[in-house]
Length: 164
Image (cartoon, rainbow, N blue to C red; front, side, top):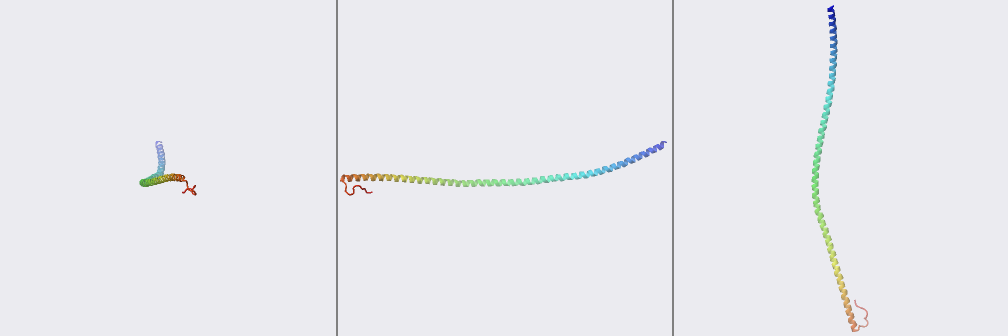
């Protein structure tokens, strides 16, 4: 009785081990399949991550290149602006000299005009003075003539008229 029971227990144990080994093989196959799937997913994720990293690096490099070009362009434009500004200052100074010359010419014209007016005023004053002197002299001569003719008795026929 002891041997038969041992044998059945042994058979039951072997059947149980065999069932567990099959279950283990099935689980191992499932684990390998899941591992393979996960490895594929991991590879895809690594590829996507690498692609994104390279895209970011590419964009950063492109940005750096564009900024470098823009910086060079800005430096060039700044230099051009400085050169044009210096040229503008030189031209302003040059034309300021012309403006000063033009201003001095206008001042000379004004002074000449004032001198001409002064000369004209002096000439008018001299003319007026000469006219006054002539009038006074004619008046004096006329009175002298009148007093002479009055003393002589006067000529008849020419009595009231004066010669001019």
